[in-house]
Amino acid sequence: MKYIMTLIFSLTFAANALAAPAPEMTAGAYDAKGTLVNVEANGLVCDFCARAIEKVFMKRDEVSGVAVNLSDHLIQISLKDGQAMSDEQITKLITDSGYNVAGIERQTAENAAE
Amino acid sequence: MKHTSKFNAAVAMAALCGLLLLPMMAHARPVSYPGGITVMAQKNDEVTSTHVHYSPTAKYSIGHRFEKHREDNFQLQAAQLNYLVNRWNKPDSQANLYFKTGLGGAYNDNGPGSNLAAFAGIAADWETRKYFVSYENRYLEAGKIASSFEQRARVGIAPYVAEYGSIHTWLMLEAKYNEKDEDPFTLTPLVRFFKGPALLEAGVSSSGSALLNFIYRY
Image (cartoon, rainbow over the protein chains, first blue to last red):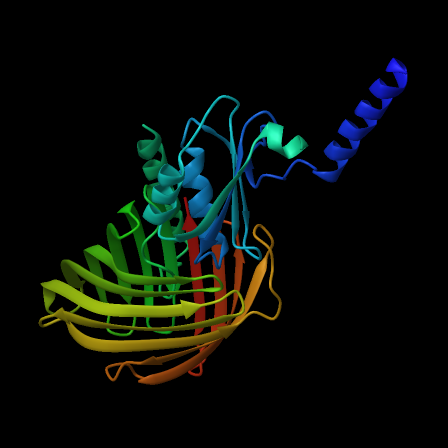
């Protein structure tokens, strides 16, 4: 019975991992142990915009990687394990770069596995 | 230290562009992200120019402009300030209004020598990932050497929408009016290729002159 439960847990964990593949960063690398911040932003229309966001966030010690998706108006910020940035800090960096934030949500290693 | 190295790289790129006689820039956002350096080179029917600027914030940039006016046979060297008056960010579009001004000197080897030069103008653009519209003007006053008012407008369409990091292609049409030019009104169909930090444009104007633009953003 214990063996079956262990097997079920392992399969469930593996299925979750397959269902939520690590996001591909356009700069830096994804830190699976850290928090992933998804930011919906306005004004991202070209590669210069995407580069600006990457450059600004990759200067931060807390940031492991950044992904910009122009089609989805989405900026994904992978924070290093144990590091944090507040919504206010993220909003200020994006606003200071010349863009607007429409929404922020966070995905930690724990809630990603749920 | 990081900025010093970026600045040196930008100066090297500017020198290379100058050697290639690719002048700098119009129709690209004249302000970058905080700490960004942009190198631009442009060659059109009348002018070969370079513009290198540094943006302390996303609201303004400061830089150097060089222009070689081949028909009027003078050169312009100026410090330039570009100021973002306003930006309108929407989910699928961005619009900008800029004020640009510069102060420096104009030099004519074959004529009246040199003169203080100043210029000012506005630039506006609206773009989505599929459509592009822009307008800009500039009044240049260099006393006995030159005095002109130039206007440019562009429309563009992307035949396909590319993702970040892929090659973006734009088909554009530029209209230019400057009553002091030999051909005051010209139309230039051109193609723009854009990938990551680099942008290249090439076209041929209605007067038969080649247009080449190059931009690199560090």
